[in-house]
Length: 184
Ligand code: C5P
Image (cartoon, rainbow, N blue to C red; front, side, top):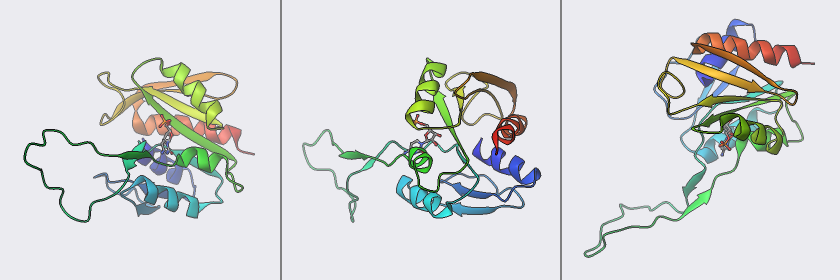
């Protein structure tokens, strides 16, 4: 969805910077792209783009990251049947953008959920101080990750708008219609 929103925004005349994690998607024409591998790198790259007018956070950022990175291969030990890796929380890029001194006029998040999609989405809208959040149900056929079609329920403080089911390009334009209507 992030790539679809970026391409649709370019088509509507926006200057777009796409910060992408490790995906095998071609770069849409007409935008600048920064590739990152880790949540920490994505955080740094996104913060460096501020100020901007609109931020759309669509990446499925890892919530936890290894506490330390071994410089060498971790060898299995005789008699060791299990291995516990210490993980620490990653920083929430979206929440940090929304609370930044140079906060964009519109901050938009995504919420991929398997259940209670709208309740979780509304809670995130408030907790992360967002203007819009696009909720989608994952784990059902024809929706969410690695699917060309999707349904989005876009919440703001007042209520919700359902977009789709439709192709991601169409959904991206629907989301950008909602964003444009709220731009100062
Ligand atoms: O809290 P949750 O991960 O479900 O929220 C999803 C939203 O938050 C998405 O827009 C995602 O891109 C963003 N996010 C983020 N940084 C994180 C985790 C999630 O920007 N570390």
